[in-house]
Length: 167
Image (tube, rainbow, N blue to C red; front, side, top):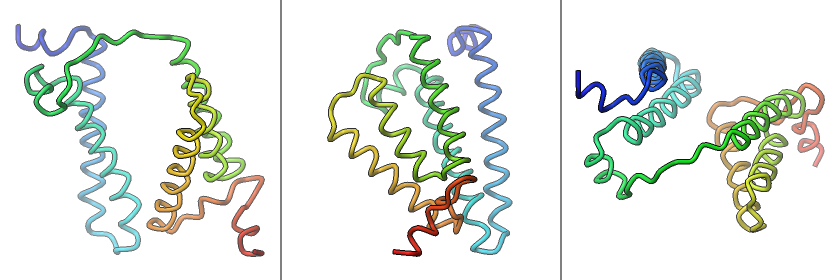
């Protein structure tokens, strides 16, 4: 039981761990099931579940591995983290706005919105960093759209694909 207490500092840590295990199991299930799909239909579930599995494993390494293993894998010593409720609420608000803007105007516009506003709200003043992040976000949406065959230019109010077909 002492080893169990070393890994988890609080009840919230245990709840987070159980939730992540559940999400990991669901993602693994979808990944395995998608291997039986037609190659074109397999892309979206395999891609999204694979990314989810990857980031959950990274989170497990960061949070739950013993300190020695963490340091050998990441090459960094763990620093004390300071919680900032204002920044957490701001991030949550920006992501809610991102979802609403994605629905109304499509993902290309929402990615520009998020990749420009979030660094500005976090205090980044380097315009080159913001521009590079914005271009990288648009590139990620384009690659995702290309491999999944989903029209991410279309929103409820605006369909950018019509504009690009006119050009």
